[in-house]
Length: 443
Image 1 (cartoon, helix red, strand yellow):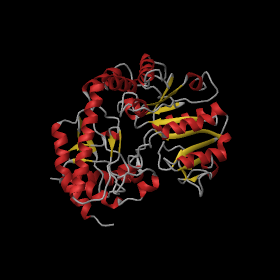
Image 2 (tube, helix red, strand yellow; image 1 turned 90 degrees about the horizontal axis):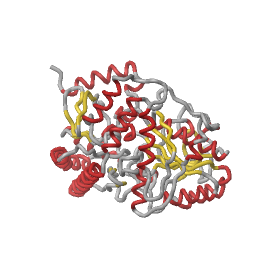
Image 3 (cartoon, one colour; image 1 turned 120 degrees about the vertical axis):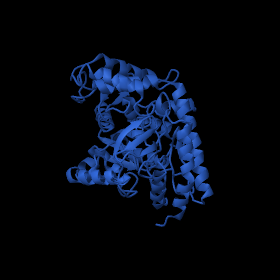
Image 4 (cartoon, rainbow, N blue to C red; image 1 turned 45 degrees about the vertical axis):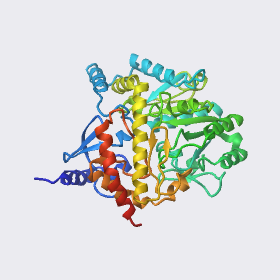
């Protein structure tokens, strides 16, 4: 009889024979933590089960989409019902109209309403790529400003690395990205007011847009400094540029109106020109979206000159999952996720403190993570300057105790509305041993 890990090892060997690296998205390969990836066979509520039959309390939640928990019965039923009527049409459906209206209706606080029209696409990468093309079409400009450490998908212009100075055109951040394309992107430090001012002072009349994660969650959780997102909007608009707010990860996860809504509730006041959505908006199915003011969005084909198309855009199964998820994402669901996130963030803080591990537990709404440094990072350089070697033993100690964490220190932890007392207590019980493993780690 195979031991628990053998089935995963066997599958990983088979996968590497036919799939580059054995995975279809790099972080799944466990490159930063080592060991064999868990091949998941099923998921239900707050738990996942791997190919060897071992069950874990899940703190990945499909990297965010499973806000309600895995395989929520009403979401599954909606997808099953949609499937009986056809898997794909390549034609408009009533569900697309309902989902676009629901997105626009949710993203408002008081009289502030940044989303009037919505275009449905299939992936977050497609949403941000389209948003950038739309911004360039709207402004007639070419340059894009992004922040170091922010991830907006893998289109060429976004895989750009910082040049040698604040206002220097970027260099390719990946093989296969032509230098002239990377040079259309300006990469500056996050949460750096002076860098933002400098890049606009140098290139302001050539900048089409600034793209920013509403709250960074791809270099660990790094929240914007108070007023920083407002400053981005004000600076961009003062120079005739647009602000693209990337809520592919945060949208509808941290607040009914996304991180933008949470910030409005907390007293900030700014209006992004384009917002991108993914993950929760599709309820775990392949679906993403971008939305903004009608005058900007209507520059998209077929009414405008900016071309975008997709055979599977607005896929009826994905739309059904998105509609069901957003309708079930009630204030009560958010309150449950918020409370669970606070409880586990506090438990993580206590366990690492008791073990004598230098750390911070950065938060942005109900997103949190761990940074092995004395203070929470404010930018990419600070996120990199941590004792990240401590995460691998911490990760494996948690996994051995039946808790699945993201396989990278630079990712957020995700709670769901399905995490109950039993699951939360299991995570709390696992943390002290994992903290001791982190304390014992050496570089």
